[in-house]
Image (cartoon, rainbow, N blue to C red):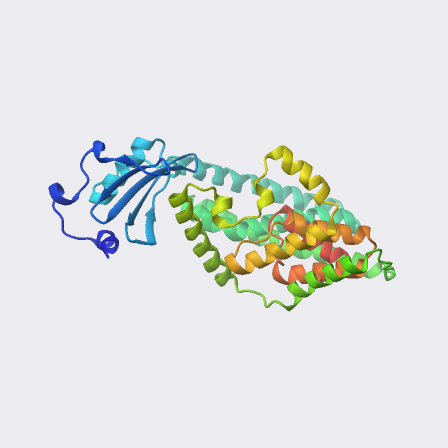
Length: 358
């Protein structure tokens, strides 16, 4: 295919096969600058606060090349032509221009974390008799830093952070792990001294129809096998490629191209008014979570945490504690990590009601 010949190299004369002048650019149906050379199409479009270009074979949309963002339309056009011709880059992308700033921010972040660790160590050393509630705060802070370090150390290397500071970050991770063990041990000791909890009384106020709807939702999560993370990523990448192609072809928004729920397309004022009522509608929340989970299984897009949290809250308000527990257990089976504040709140709620181990 012509696109693969371009991608891997082909013989061509500069006069016969290379786009050579600005006046050969035309405007596509979507309003984007476009240039067609033989079987190759170059398109320039606005995205990510800048201008990008896409180089693709006219008859093959499977493997287009998308560039980084550039400051202006003209820079993106000139970079596209240089890339197509195999010439040196003429302009710096927006991402490249921020590389040094990113490196400096990461290095400052590492140094600030050292101060945080010292504060945590001092706080725990000076307060030997903290209760469980008081210990939860440093526990959450330590866990947050450990989760960040799991992926940030790789980012430090990519950003060109100095070897000494990367080594410091690795030592910080070890220090935080020791603090996590200390806090967990202290909490365990405190919990062992607590009297046993009474089993919460469940006196459900749900109607038969609502009970059935919630049970259907719980069953959907509980009976669906957990999808391997690599498969989730594969599905999501494929869906993003398809959505991008639709956006370029039809001038549609991301929501339209990706098949997002229609209620998300409302203007802000209408959306707020709509959600004010929807937040109290358990049947609607169950349907929304069900649709979002099915969408996750299809395209790998993780459901937003607001809606499952509303299901749990509304079940609690209806005094159906057993169904709340079952729902949270089923949710955490598929989404156990708690990455992000609201996702973490769901996991913490599940632990609190006994849906998953604390």
